[in-house]
Length: 418
Length: 88
Image 1 (cartoon, rainbow over the protein chains, first blue to last red):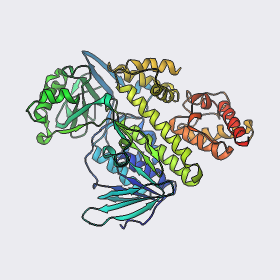
Image 2: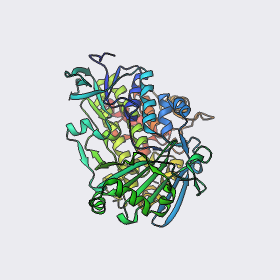
Image 3: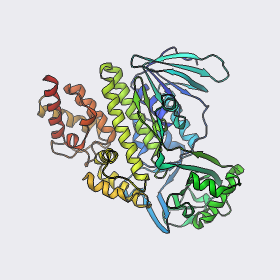
Image 4: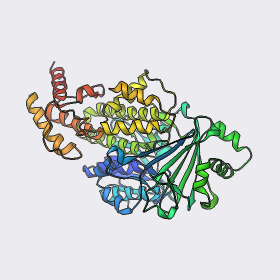
């Protein structure tokens, strides 16, 4: 398919934020061009989804396709934190729809194909080279893989949904590493790992359809009060990852390979080691990422919106990343639709989008930080989101925060929110 | 739009277009829209669009606090105030 010369909205990136923003806008009748650097299905991490994500997929009309895929339904969480085991079941909070463990290559692909089916023009293996942004219109230079000359695409708005690449945030100098979270993550995939069911018992990988798994989290004592690991059972493999302070990880790793460090830390956790007994690390390969916690000083400005991880990312601990991405996509699509209809009010709609998204990111930060100032302007942002949450959402927030020792102040936050 | 009319129009809109599960009755002016689950974080965007489009009230980011959106009555008060400011 040929790239158009112009469209209403250009979206950079075909992960959940980009595909959903494209879907919402295409369904509302706008011309959308989505530029995806890779060809789907492509690898992505972040396999655990809390049930809140269905709300955004319902709005996009893609829920039936996701249900038909048959992803692993998870029952809740099992957490070993500094010697205490705690469990959380989503059904106890009135959720009627399942939380999922998804292979992100499949999940993201379904969302991208749905954007295409909804009328968005989707271009794979096309990168957004240069971008000229402005309140009166934008231009994106689009380069197809294998070609040497970029083609200009004129549009009213550019949505950055480029994930951790944060294309616009970096170009515009908006991205700030969050110094409270100097972490790195090392993770890999295992075949034939056992898992913990909601009953607290260990089950073999083959039982995953009959006995729903929980997401298993354990604190890593050797990294002080901060580090932790995840264990997420999917259909054919299990994602296992460590989240550790960068300095501590480098010191502990020494001259060894990251694979060797990763396996040693996994084996040193008695219950995680029991789950992994006899399991095989796929391709003997681990992935490493650092400084993934950052925020953007602005998430919207003349001609542009930042969504998903391109706007910011906190910490994977409560599986809120994908849901926050989807929220940002819905909020950006709302602001864009309204701005295309009432251009004179664009700045106000962008301001509403920005305030709402920044508040939510602050709440995510509140949940993940062990020390948190409850009387600063930042906590007012988090409180504002809590006030707009219903009883079920607040109860889940409180229970989730009680699973680890990282978020004792969340109770205080809820109390103050009234 | 008069307050009473707004409460009735917006109540119907929330029941039919905003709530994820359709309620048995159209909410009255004092029903807590958030606690009752009728309006969530996404529904809020629809409500803002509705009152801007139907009432000509221009909503600013700082208006989006619970006091202004907890009930239909509170929303009507907000709209009244915003319209007054617009006219002044």
